[in-house]
Image 1 (cartoon, rainbow, N blue to C red):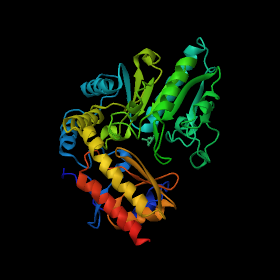
Image 2 (cartoon, rainbow, N blue to C red):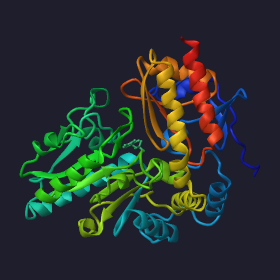
Image 3 (cartoon, rainbow, N blue to C red):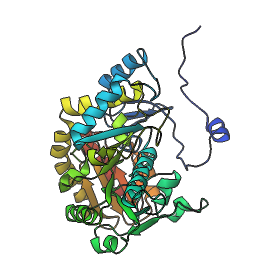
Image 4 (tube, protein in one colour):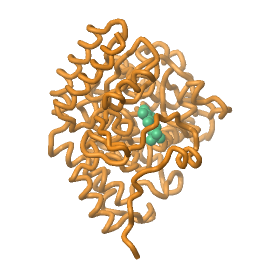
Length: 406
Ligand SMILES: *Cc1c(COP(=O)(O)O)cnc(C)c1O
């Protein structure tokens, strides 16, 4: 057999004739990546601060990651969860090391991790109701949240643009306002099983839960026997300079959903559940064919290895100060366009005063890729190993784009 070839380009016609039109994409085909750089099929280079939406934690094609995945692919790729595999056990041990005493369930995406959290809440509700199924099932989430596109995730995501066309939603979700503890407390009743929030809301524009609010939620949950479930899918795995962003608040949740950065580009999601609730799952009541394959776990282990070996979280903490300051200077210099900057390590939102789409195009023309978020925000999500020069370059490009419109 001939050796496999790499498909290096695709015409817009061929792509658009065959791929589902569920995204409005710019005319850009990416074919190669290295560190924080990607190249399109015309050979143009971009500084990639999209990072595949906070996924490529080590940038593109990091040599340690590539070697780990290549080696594992040649050794063992998939065996299902009917058998143990060494990589899954080791990755679970490492996640428990960050999260605390507990157990880990592996899946393939953020939505699936959150789905497991929602199922955990239901199981807790059954226990709370003395074994009665379907009675204690309510979950309190946050306005402007984003938890994914499955029915559970959508139901926890109170946004018309996400729910429209798919109703009815799953029953039992209600919504408080982040950083308004009273608004959550008022929604609790005897049938409530859990509170479920993003520690820092990502898709809606980088809106953080304050440490006081998170501690308040923890107290409410303790008081009413509710689970505190935190969605760390976007803000977790080192992005804020701590492994989990709730570490800034010093709370311990009952379960954590994580995904995006964990595999460094290989699809993997995980739920960590605190030891005292881990027994709610038993053989048969949850599962996945693909979750936690040797290959996916080897990829995630490579990410954790590099984060630890290269002290990337320390670097994120050290470098984000000057970077945020330089971005804030943009807000000061272009008040007609920029309303402010919200930054937590390498999870940054630049609040614009108008629709971000033309700004994204202006950044792209100047060689910077970045995603938008709700509320006229441009997100900047560099890889965790971005250099100070790359961070500075992002500011330079942003400044040029702003100056061109003044
Ligand atoms: C991206 C995201 C999800 C969904 O993850 P998928 O892997 O796209 O299913 C859930 N929650 C948060 C906070 C996210 O940012």
